Image (cartoon, rainbow, N blue to C red; front, side):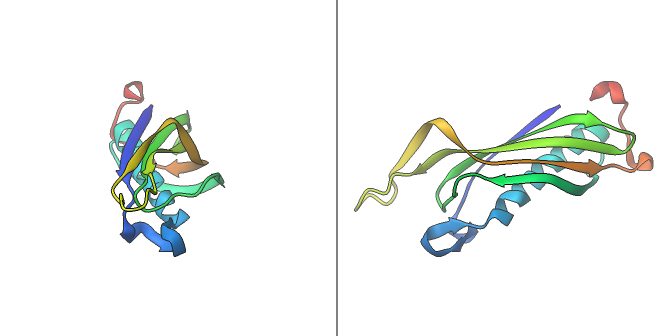
Length: 132
């Protein structure tokens, strides 16, 4: 099962000088994708138990458009192992006197890769596993 989210990082998301976005903000978006996956699979939001790995590969800045992809790769009794990839698909063009100019990135740039485990207690699982 897969899920996808597209979002633009705003000045509000920037945490560091130069408009650099805090990595924790991107992890929050991954959490949103994980929540959607659990709702689709189990009918419940579940809980994010742990990350197995997180790789911050490239910087993200205010104004960048990100696509966050998530996938359930293994289903246990209550655990759901997931993998995530985050791509920058549009970025600011940084042209003087054209602050609103942006470039579509072709190909998109992989900015983060992560994997982790979520848990949905048995009593909260409402969907038949054949639907997953």
